[in-house]
Image (cartoon, rainbow, N blue to C red; front, side, top):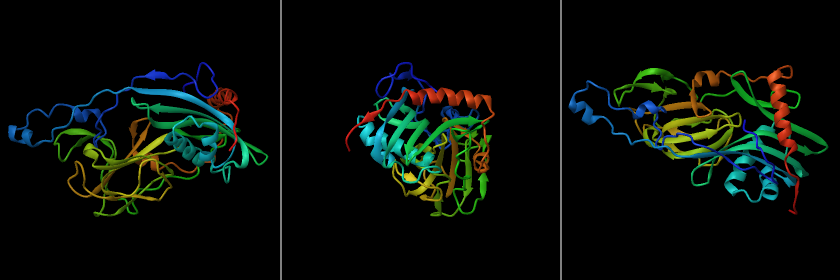
Length: 334
């Protein structure tokens, strides 16, 4: 978690972080995919392999913003009042995020009026647009109640907890297809069927007929929905707990960028676009940009555990509480 050093009415000066991100991401999701062709292949086979575009480094800015004030309506409507200088796209992202994390405790957002405090981290592209956000802590005073939520990584599982350390994760993940038939698992030593090289396979391939509906495995917001290199037609969904899921080689995309989705919503249809030998779904799960085994992510059970006796949790809650205490109080007419 990054904590601001100086308080302003809304946000603190950004900290520049240079992150190496591939300009073109393949369905393999690994920098190893940009290596030289495998040695020892005949010249004719080398000529037939796919020539991949070179990767380049692009800068990313990461900063922490503090927003607070009195408003009413949905979270997105409230943000339009107390954070009107943010872009509409960013307000939409933060609003959708708040919808998800407050869902277990608040019905109808701020309703006729209330106070909202939010501390969140954002990642900006080189052109200044916001790529992703992560709410670190949030508080809503509405209807006579005070609801405070904190982001915390308990063990290897990130999620949101209330002020007394009770988990707010709503439900376990579901599979992206109605029937899951694994044709290629998550492994580091797979021989790629087209590139004919041993490369990491950072996801799971599910065999399915062309046109089979592909469904979101958890609630979230669509962060990418277009053609993308070796992935072919790709949909990426950002989830409130810090995870992202990718659905690749789709024949058709059924969602648009920035659209909120719920678990089970159809986001596309099985196809064979990009580097694919036949119709199937390539499914990835990423945490902080790094691939994790989807089978482990989908095995997470709904939890009601308490972390109140965890010393690390108490320290994190104290630090995030100090951030919320520094949020401004903006009052504007609606």
